[in-house]
Length: 115
Image: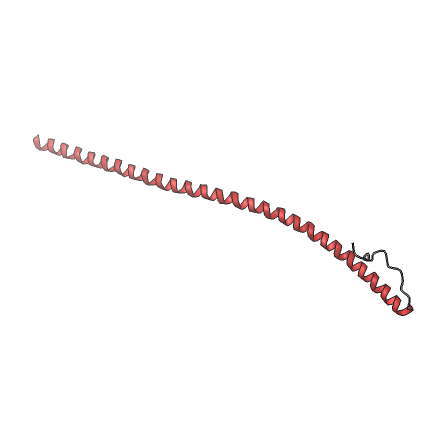
C-alpha cells in the first residue's frame, strides 16, 4: 500500500507541475499578446494621424488646383483677346502699307497710352 500511495503522490505532483507550467505558459502568452496588441494600437494611432495629415494636404492641393485652373482660364482668355487684337493690328498695318494711309484703330486694339 505504501508503494501505491507514493505512486499516487508522485502522479499528483506531476499533474500539479503540469498545471503550474500550463498556467505560467498562459500568463506568458497573455503578456506577449498584450505587448503585440499595444504595439499594434500605437501603430494604428500613428497611421490615423498620417491619414488625417494627408487628407488635409489633399484638400489644400485641391483648393490650390481650383485657383490655378481659374487663373489659367483668365490667362487663356486674355491671350485669346490679345491674339485677336494682334491680328486686327496686323491687318491694319498691311492695309496702311498698301494704301499709304493709317486706318483708325480697330475696337479690339490696346489703348494708347496703356491704362
